[in-house]
Length: 138
Image (cartoon, rainbow, N blue to C red; front, side, top):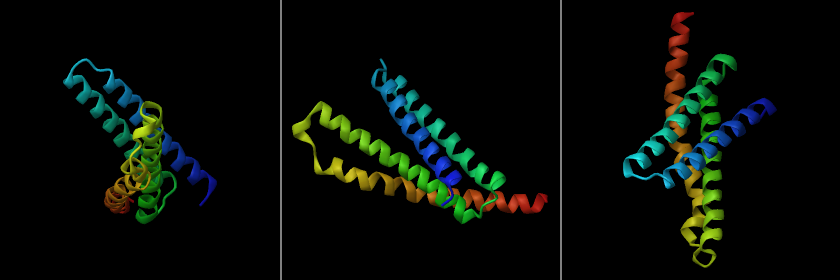
């Protein structure tokens, strides 16, 4: 994989990680349930914009195939989910070191998988539609 691709994938994974951490912290400090929900939606919105931007970048700038676009999108999403799982494990060690559960350790594998698989499917479908529209316009 080219270093420019790695930079984009890692950069977007950091965006997903920061969106989860920052908006999660803001939701944790929210005074009402509605505010918690608003912060959670904000995290989803930022992540969706980053994901969509990644697909457009892959299709327009790099002109990758829909499959390659989907793989890169899934890698970024999965890596971001791994970062969130790692952060959850670190947080659990700080808050309650004696109660570290097996499920939390398994989250290091489970979260990236359950994030990357749907991200791959969505990115593949969107990139295929994008490529079809681009061919018709050209």
